[in-house]
Length: 564
Image 1 (cartoon, rainbow, N blue to C red):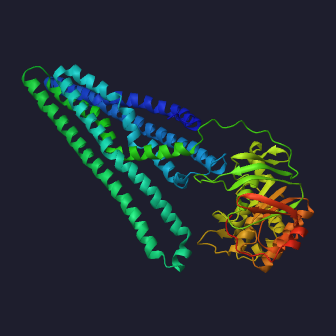
Image 2: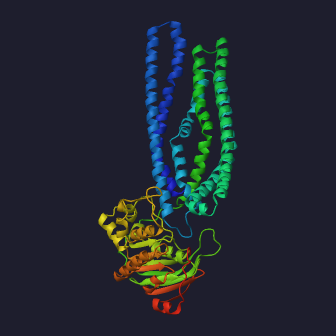
Image 3: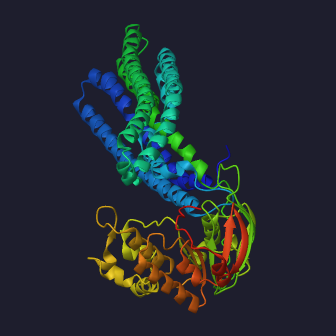
């Protein structure tokens, strides 16, 4: 699979720090050679000469080497932690960009809901012991060569031990790969189901679904845990076998060295040096075996991240266009939801002059909300084009477009934070701008009556606002900065009579300021203040007429709309 540009840039960003880690590892492994050299000098020189000063000098030298070893190891760990931070910053930004930037013919993939979990998995592996084991692995042949320099028989034995552990590592990978992949797939389904239960807790409680949903969730969790346990048990078993094998080989080389020493073919110091070197040579292989589970988990997570991030270079920075007047043109727009067999909207065309108020009506599933999302820039059409002041919306700078188009979605989504944070869009808006937006939405009085006013925290624990209050706060967010175009999808769905009166007053104010307003509604009150009414059916726009003409021909409207 060809790496996406984002991944290539990530690898380029971490190449430098990993190069330093590799350099530190080089000196660190060279420093480790002090231990076998010390053994050889003590057993081959000091014990024969009985020189205490020589012993003290050698001990001081090896102590200094171990101090350098510890310092290098600490620095290497800190640099590797920096690699983890780079992974967090680069991949996190790319994932958020992918999820917040619409693309032609696509929406957020299902695995996107678990991107933070996948990002943590990759980040933790980047700074973990498994990464260090791979970095130290190239030194294993060097240690084996040094053992062979002590004696060829020891070298052959060490190579055999290395081959056995490498075989065990490959066996670990094959044994754990399939259950880990299955566990990842089932885990995603279990997490999605659990999130859905949390979001729809009221529905589950009132409809008596708790027991059934709990059984289903536990079944998914059980399947996930079974696969994880199978992979874990195999990895633990093979890890234990690998550790046992390393200890056996490290002890067996002592016996082999003793036999060679009895035959006067090896010095006594080389016996212990060979054991130390073999343990060091096999340590990375053993570390990789022990880390197979996080290695496979990181591999699966990185695969899902690669599926999310762009598979092409980012487009050039768009030219900032003049602030829009609010002319909107929809030209033969078609859009099909991902995985659907038929489009939600087909060949829709319309033109809305700056300052006009257009209301879109129609039965459920007619495509009204899809048109609203296309007009707001939340979706990119599969065919056709949506233009703002004559320019394709896809060519506008996202930040500029966000300030020029205010959007109130059908399903109000407020984010954890204060009311002020949400109205300010978590940006650098001043208090004056925030209050002005709230007043434009006729929500200021409602907000200041709350115990904490604009500082009210919006989360399930700290505040419990009604649907109408949330909708009016979301409307204020849409009106921040006095945008040229305002898209309102069922803005009065959760409003009482006072809230609807405030909304109507808000739309009249926008109309007086020559702002372009597009509304999706089933309420007759908003239709009365509309310049034009467009009717949709089965994904197509079947007619456009003035508000007066529409009202003269319609029977009372039915308030049953939920999702178009």
